[in-house]
Length: 266
Image 1 (spheres, rainbow, N blue to C red):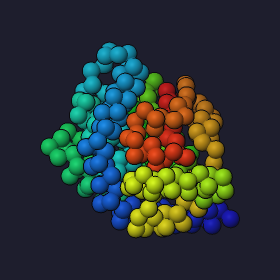
Image 2: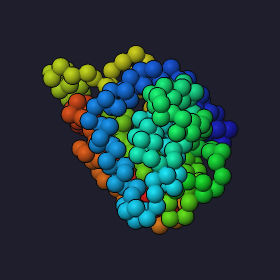
Image 3: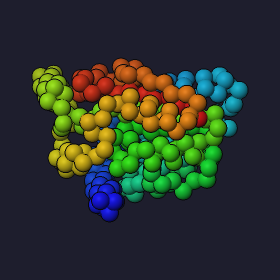
Image 4: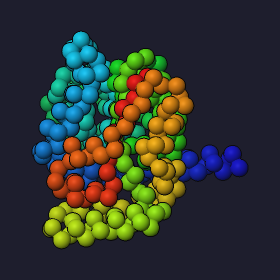
């Protein structure tokens, strides 16, 4: 039974790696749209507020705060944080994502440390970062508990962890959520907007998601329970952070799948 579990996790990791390496150019276009849109301001404002408030509203200079953006993808959050003056490490397990992130960062890329990393088995030393953050990653991991343990391991005592995610593929296992998801697709079409949930290879991720442990879990309640069991100092959540950071087009696309934020203090 244990051998079968290990094989399944390995298989998921292999499929995920192949999918995201192929997906990198298209996903990079989404990040470029965000960088050119209102999201550049909304996300930058949110992240800077959360980080500066945690560290005493200026008691530490931005350049003194070291941040790990795990699952950085084509670099959106890392670019914003580097622009704000933070010391940023952008880590992703897909080589093509890292290359896209470097291109998207342009001149500011030299201010970002790009690393290829497995989110569930980081190579960084213990207590290396003041802040660890991720966006749209935990749902996609074969072993999210292992990832959370690792992120906390590399986070300094009293450090801040921010997790942005959503119940992205619950429509695969919940009829009510499938109906709401389909209604989103109809609304997007009715308004003549681009549908972020339709594209080449999306059926591949649907199949991968059916086997991922987070699909069908009640989140962020699951995350809060798991993180508290890891003896962190504090965990609190914001149920619909998308209402603050999303563009109007994103709000229509993801109406039935609100993005949440988990704020953790080690």
